[in-house]
Image (tube, rainbow, N blue to C red):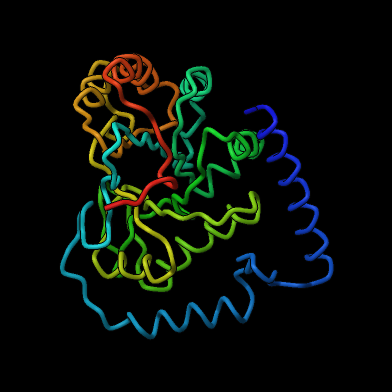
Length: 279
């Protein structure tokens, strides 16, 4: 059944790409019922200007991983966990095939937050992940910037410097993902997962939910396998776990591989964010 679904997704995606090429050739920027809006169009610029005018005078007071608008848990009574994996796209980024292949082998669902730069570095891998029904592709930003309206920094990474950059950081990668997959992302997670409350409000107004986390799984792929396992084994029903799939030289894969069988033995299932409401 899964093989049939996989083939259907591939066919649908091929049809969508052909349609995009035909429309591009005809210079048609908007498809009715499909949010494919090139960012150099008057429509995009008008939308951007409208949001800038609304928020340009707002001064944020918070700067954190959890500000109003960031959701960190599933709304559920089910014994389930949401494993989320970030792919950030820096110069040192790679692809943790060992981790992804393990999830496929064990039929573990996951939500993949993918940055535009990572997509450009690994287009063929992205294509395969996007059509695999185990995985949900979500938005990790255009340049992996912290989400700020005034250029705040965290971990040595400078955030978006104004409202317009917030919009571009979120929307340009969402449109990129949609143009490649035919599906509009539902969730956004900023680079570093840091926000001010004004930028979080902007993301929500753009139509996206901000997916935070309740379990720090690998601390930016810096944890040892032992620490990753320990972190995951503290999970409770409805938790959102954050780990990374862009550093195979680290020990994230080993830690997840060690934790998953024990979590399953405790009765936990693994689900995608899109299938649940968040709180």
